[in-house]
Amino acid sequence: MGIVNVTPDSFSDGGLHLAADRAIEQGLALSAAGADIVDVGGESTRPGAARVSAEEEKHRVLPVVRALAEAGITVSIDTMRADVADAALDAGVHIINDVSGGLADPDMPRCAAQARVPYIAMHWRAPSAEMHRHADYHDVVAEVTAELSRRLDALLAAGMGFEQIILDPGLGFAKNADHNWQLLRQLEVLHSLSRPILIGASRKSFLGRLSGENDVPGLRDDATAAVSALAAAAGAYCVRVHNVVPNLDAVRVAAAWVRRAENSPAVHLH
Ligand code: PMM
Image (tube, rainbow, N blue to C red):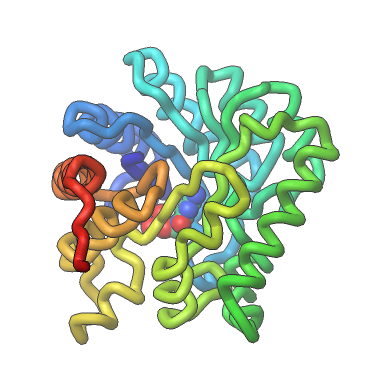
């Protein structure tokens, strides 16, 4: 999954129209580079980010979603709002990516249930502006798994189909670097929920901290690709990334590696 953020501030100068044109170009390029899905978002969820209005969010994403869907690309909409998701579905979107897993907007499960499209439910505890205060766990893997399991039950109770739902541990969302690594290290626990798992590690600050650099997200692409390879080998269904080519290589390496392991004869030590 390749990432397209349609936020005017992510495209330095120029207004919304220029931002939309640049976002469409970027989405086409991600698809041409081999992304199976292009994820379009109009609201920053970075730590501390303030929210934009639903109207502003729609203005940002709809022209981009429409153009990419018309070009034959599988598009997901990264939104916490049912209203935005509904409009994006009308504009041709195929997948809903809700970082709040249905908690931010009580109407979202209804929207996803009616549309019958794949729905990514991410682990989330609080809006970005206050999520750091909620990065408090005794056992992060057990708690994230239990909270996702409760979301799964709530989404099913709202009428969604089990087969629609994709789960995501939400790296960096109310989680510090150590929490993120613990979740990645024990992906098999999330697999116990029997749903496909999506991993969004791309360029996040916990990867920068590893090498001692903190402020240059573009320099985190190699570490991102390493996470993609390991996550894919551990059974992740999808990785959400900014730079498609190295991550596509990484998941291909993982696929070849795992296949090799499956085909190799059992080793008898005695
Ligand atoms: N991370 C961000 C935004 N959307 N969606 C999913 N499903 N999983 C994530 O981890 C995720 C997401 C924030 O990252 P960005 O600002 O680099 O897009």
